[in-house]
Image (cartoon, rainbow over all chains, first blue to last red; front, side, top):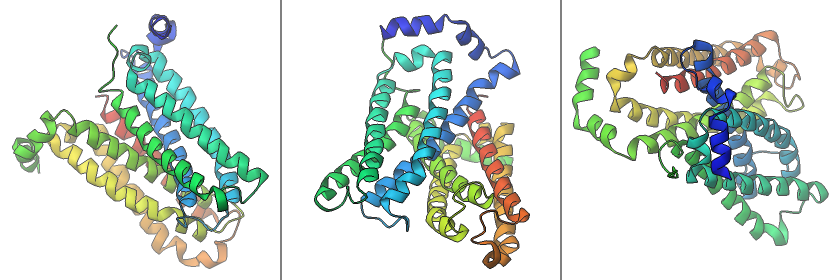
Amino acid sequence: MLQELSDWLAQSQLNELFSDTTRLETWLIIPLSQSLHILGIAIVMIAVGMLNLQLLGFRVTRQSFAEHTAQWMPWIWIAMAILLVTGVVQTIAEPTREIMNYTFRIKMIMLAIVLAITVAYRRQVKKDPNYWSGERQGLAYSLASLSLVLWFGIVAAGRLVAYVGGIEA
Amino acid sequence: MWDVLTWIDSTQFAETIRVSLWMFPALEIAHVAAIAIVLGSIARVDLRLAGLVSRDRSISEISHEMLPWTWISFGLATLFGVLLFLGQPVRYAEIAFFDVKMLLIALAGVNMLVFEYVTRKGVGRWDRAPIPPVQVRIAGGLSLAFWISVLVCGRLIGFV
């Protein structure tokens, strides 16, 4: 199924447009999209990094965890929207490189886990500001450590897609 | 200058970075991760200086939270960037985007120094202001513009 999606994208008109390197304005699409993508990563990295470090007990802000999550969540969603749009553009431009690549697939799974953890932080703390302390401290530590490791994994996987994990057609 | 770059190119060290299968990707990952943290942290300070976010919190509080991240990750990004550069110094120096990127980093540095030593003098008067004076907002806007341009130039280097 993914193979078909990849093939279909490879034959689409958008693919032709995005991978046309003969004109300056189309040649610029991918580097500009990648730059915006890194900007989105920058926002999420700082946001997720700060939230996780606070849960791990580092005093990264004077805000409470509830205030801190409320501050970052809108930014995380804005950044995710940027990442989705630019990521889709890059996938349409080079469908085989992304979709038919194990590193890319692992990256998407890691992303889903990190997002789920971050959304859980916010949801629970909204109902109970002390949700992640006391008896759930251990759980909070585990989730924060996992989330941090996966975040670096996502950034690394994003770059590694260019080098490893290609699936033979 | 050119002689130095040519000499570096010919060293065993440069050769090692060039031919290694994993060194370039590893350095690149570290470089990009560090840059993401530089950008994310400085952008937050810049947007506050511009009066666009967190207007209910003081500028010094936001700076205090973010700037240690900026400095540490800038140091790391530079370290990994220099190592990437040393692998192929002549090639990079010949790429216009690389030269422009270095110039933009220098301009971001000048903007920061002017802000630190001139504009910031009256910080007591506007530290808590939801919308700071115009010269402060300009400093924030310029900083953001410089860093985003650095990012774009950096990415373009990979496409020529």
